Length: 297
Image (cartoon, rainbow, N blue to C red):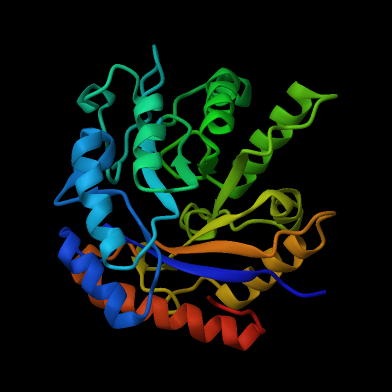
């Protein structure tokens, strides 16, 4: 049973704020995929399509592709709800979007970059949240995904309602039950962030990974110093990445129609030493993949 190969990418602003830094890093470390979120501190969702197009052209001229628009969609309070507080990395106010509808603008921006995936969240965590609260939002996003031929990647993020892998699995199970006997739209995908789950103190269970793995086509990679409560370069922390990747990829390979390639995006989260930490993380992924017999492309 061959395991899916990993398509290596880096998130640009985990290297540095400028586009020049992102492009030069990719050339130096033989990375061909650049997932995009911000440039010079400005989120792409806050730019005009013309501004985004100018950035996209420079990336294309450098011989790179942008598989994922790492958008901040729904990383803000739900209408009529507050939040439980906590630091929000790469926070975004939808009022800063230049278009009337941030959802449509996000899909338009993803198209400008040629991305076939768009990362989304689940609103900032609030008391009394239920998976059904999100059904309407993601039904609309599934419609947009079908129109634009772009997959919607729902990430587990600690400050959001879907924070752990378990909460991600619960959401997909609940939405599958909601649409039954129809199938869940293929364009809705779980963006599994195992590092985030470990940071919350709730590593994923075998059952949670098994339930999500058949739909996974994108993962984020970071590591965690658990006692120190800080994020560290991949391979330097306490997350058992060789075992976690083996478990996830093995379950993905068991799917009725297994995916052959999973997009593996380095999200270092080490701003104090961003470029070096991302370089170490890229090297670590290649080393770990070789140890477990998985191809990195």
